[in-house]
Image 1 (cartoon, helix red, strand yellow):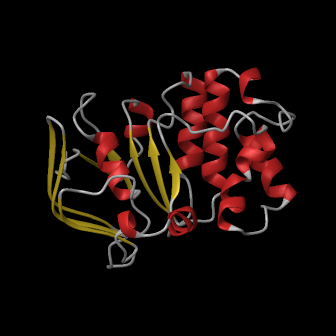
Image 2 (tube, rainbow, N blue to C red):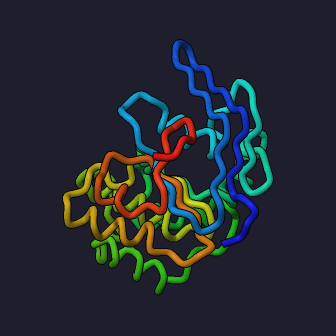
Length: 212
């Protein structure tokens, strides 16, 4: 792995109403699979949103691939960050095929090759679902659509908030393998309560960046 961190946070403070999260220092290097664990409401999602540039910290230094993501345009975030939020963020007017091609559309890049799309959809059990709408899918199927979109994103940094929360044990195992069994230098940072996923991380941290 490279010695230069993909993610570097120093003396970060996030204050939102009565919520307060302090991150003295956090480094994540290329190729690492890092899990964030804590009770609900303790800052797992907040940390991920800081990394994704969706929240600006009250103070401190945030660097993702050498840039502060919060001050970059949306096009930069679309190109450099593969994001899977806990709410999945699947536009209801898009079909499965359109959902997994959304990142390419936002990046103004060619859509993934049909063979790649078919292979990824098949790997998450959605072969033949290309023209299905979101309201025709179960919550678990929708989560697998979101994971497929993440896997097809060309970014080398993947941020995922509870990516297996709605999956049964079998699909949790399968999707954990897909999310984490990526070749270097893919870097994955995720928040989860799923012991299957947590057990596969290279290291586990708290939202404050402390090792567990």
